[in-house]
Length: 348
Ligand SMILES: [Ca+2]
Ligand SMILES: [Ca+2]
Image 1 (spheres, protein in one colour):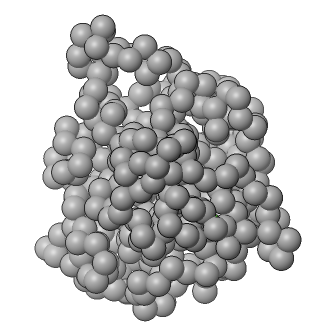
Image 2 (spheres, rainbow, N blue to C red):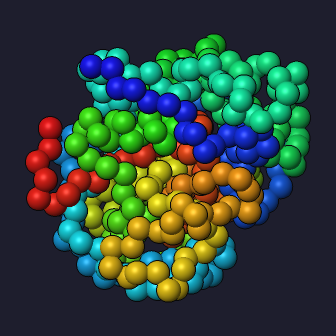
């Protein structure tokens, strides 16, 4: 079976596409930045990574304080919300899991398809030719010190989930989270798998696991130690993406909710929570209300929890409340996802 899919019709005008690449670490990230990190490190010898599992964790649901008010403004106001019981993947969706989907369906991801020039909304001769080739945005440390985030994000033709660092880089690692997927790619996988993308409320409830909000950089999460992007100390054992399950799980038994890769949710993004929104199983604002000042003209989706690139001096988003908007029409090398399943639903 070949699952039809299309590039997200509402995404990727020229400015949006460029701004996406520039904003992958995302709006409100404080911090400047000069240069250089080293190639991938092997797993730290003292980190024992669990074997990935297809079995989700059942959560009872409940009432919790969603949001945080002492870090970035888009995370507030905090408010009490309730989510119903559901099940959730123990870890980010891995390349091995996504490969099984591709093998079963023949699915081609959006990053593997040429880019429609019409999506840019400008004359053809104004579009950089390489941006019309299949590809995706890859974190590429600059050769020289820089304070411009556009200097460390690069649109790399040939980058996709199979070749996450581009055509000259290594193949995917089976146990690492799949990256370079657009929203529609994730949704197609979810339909095949019998799950769905979590709402932001479900994701944050699962990630918080009853703990109080903190502003500290967690020890048990793949983030960035040192001054981003000048020096990646890799004290946590990985200077790039880690295989799933190499850090201790949270109190819900979930791995890498915070850090490693950002995780997509089904909510559309607006900068801040609506204090008037429903408190029972909130699903975020309507598409008409979606707005990201950093990406005007797009209908961004909320991504959660930060990535391996989040450092104390830059993008302190290694927290459950952390959120930012993402163009759903294009993937990147630091964004993945996991699925949720209805509590009473069978699973293939
Ligand atoms: Ca790290
Ligand atoms: Ca994560």
